[in-house]
Every structure is written in structure tokens, then in C-alpha cells.
Image: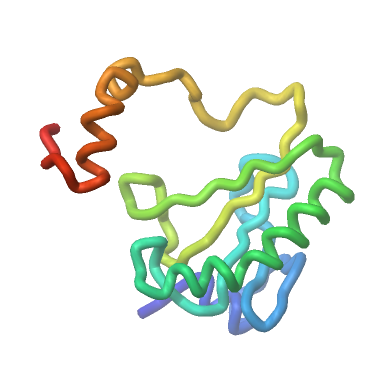
Length: 140
């Protein structure tokens, strides 16, 4: 299996590493959404949050997420950082190694995502809750 992030972590592909420890690494995204857009990845290869080892991997990247967020806020003119993460093709994942996007943000910039409420989803909150709690089957 070829994994771009595993290859980067092995030092076999060039990258701009901003942080690394024995559990995780953070490097600049080659296709940034904003200046400083950084990817944080666990050294352990797992595909996404559905993997049984995901809790271990999330714990492993916590220090890297913290240190890199502070670095981005301190060194770039940013007012905050958006944390983004996708699981599966439908969610926009294109490298199947769990990773987190840290995107520096300025107050005056447009939002990265559309936060317009979905009225149909709002109307079906109780039904959705019941499906997720296992007390009702999905009816989509």
C-alpha cells in the first residue's frame, strides 16, 4: 500500500515539517486553503476515525495540534485557527491516512464552510437522535 503521508514521515518525500515528535508530525499542506495551512498526522497509519486504533492516534496527535496551533497564531498574522478533518471520499478525504487540517484565520476573511442551517435537518432532530441512540431505524 502506498501512503503519501507515511512516505513523508519516513523522510522519502520532501516536506516542510513544522513540528514532530515520536507520535506525530505537522507539515505545510502543498495545496493550502490559507497561508500556513498545516496538516497534522499521527505516525501510526490508520485510514480515518472509523479505525479501531483511532482513539490512540487522536491522543498521539494532541500535543502536535496544540503546539502547531500556537505556532501558527504566534508567527502568522492570524486571529484564530480552524481545525478540519474528513473521513471518507464523501467527506472530501483524499489521502487515506488520518490527518487534521489547521487553517490560520483572520477575522475579516470569509468563512471556510457554509454555516447556513439545514431546515429539514433541524425539523428532524428528534428522529435523528433516536436513530443515533439506536431506538429507531434510519428512514432516509
